[in-house]
Length: 324
Image (cartoon, rainbow, N blue to C red; front, side):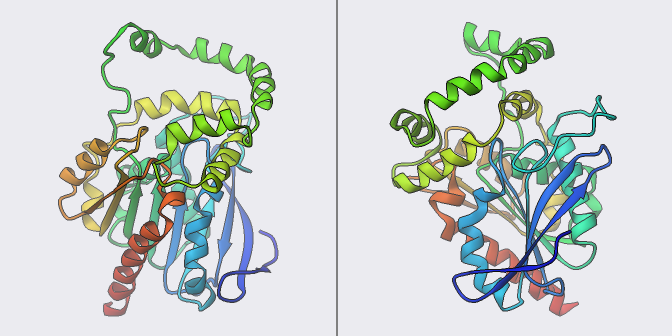
């Protein structure tokens, strides 16, 4: 862990440091920690597929005043194979690339960076799935250590439904061998990507059409495109089948022990509203928020709404701590 360093915020100085979380299979997860170690509650945020912890920057900026006053400690980290985090060690070549593994990684982040005190978890897209996998593998944490969960633009499963046509059938037949061939061509794909950098109008149009809603600004789309462009082809390819295999629809019981906020954009094409409604059906006490004119990138498109949901969870966690 590096020495603490001050960073500017919208309110006052926030102390920031970085840490490396080592997993059992040798991966090193790059984490950023804002705020005091003795803050009454810690918020841990997990990002989505082909993104990085920067996808939470707008929410972090809105939370900066709470961090600066010592009311909150914020931990963000890059998922394995994303951002500045590594893959597993070469000495563990058989490590399963799955969303379950990401749940174990989140557990390592909690064990090493938040060993005590109440925690609120927030996950966007694949980050929300990561939280579900942690809840399935370590349910004892929820209601004790973990006091609240925000699930943003995510899904408990059924991301790879039964194929409806020949093209979808072919896609579902992709084998590990075929994926290896795709990885071997990563250099060629990278050269092609450089021909359309994030600032190129065609690049931004593709990103906007897939990920954003009607009210997204050009600045939002460019920022998201730049984060995704920094991701590797390997992260895109290796995690794609893992997302299709993710299914925790019958394993969400631990989340009934804590307050849950579910948010989804009404224009989300990657994890459409039906996924959030399925989760709300299983978690009847959860608060479901369908946000108009918004796509998949809720943390950028509606950071105030996401922050409000998180602050409700933080308030509940603080009240429970005070009562104890």
